[in-house]
Image (cartoon, rainbow, N blue to C red; front, side, top):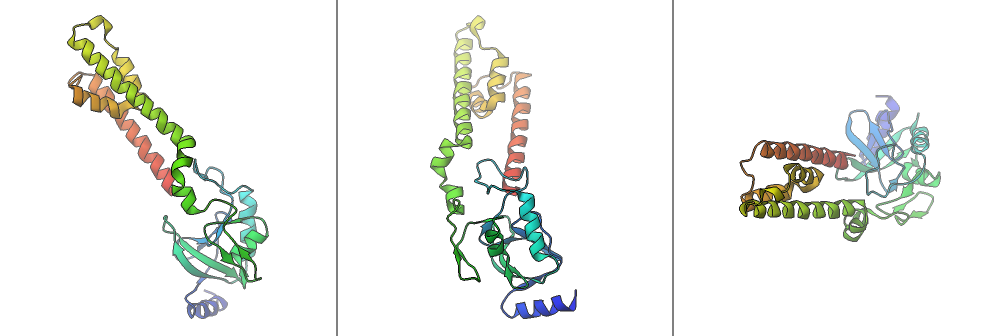
Length: 246
């Protein structure tokens, strides 16, 4: 570590800060430092997300993500970067106020138009206050949630799944009644029952099988339904991993 960086780190330690060695940037609101994991998230700002990183349903900052990253890189390149940790986010990243040779990175990125205030209000060295009022804050984005979710794409998908599961349950119940009455010509084809499960009705299909005691031993129907359910569970877990880690 260069002597200047050691001196800066020692001075920063007195006020509970730390030096960021060899700062690197994935986008316009985070800093990666040698020997420090995970990345540091700059407090009070939100920069445009890189292509594919904006999760569905999230209100992401508009703008050029590459220009924002390059602007932040220009602010830190060749300068002594000092950060003071404020918190940690739900991904385990450090949330910190960082400066490069005395230039507050959060305030500089807002002033340059490459980021917007978000999550918390920050006071800048020039005496200005940057309130987090340009985009919905974290609380509104997460849980403000119920009405927004009901009217958004996730809510629509939930409504469709509910309808499909009701249809799957009804189909099993009707087929069970017709089988009991000996009306074999009016039975619902297994392909239709499996199709409803494939469209998202597998929870109702399993529930109906157990509750109505219908097709619990029928093969290859039961194995086909098991394969469909396994694929759906895998897709669900993969989607959750992408959602939470994105």
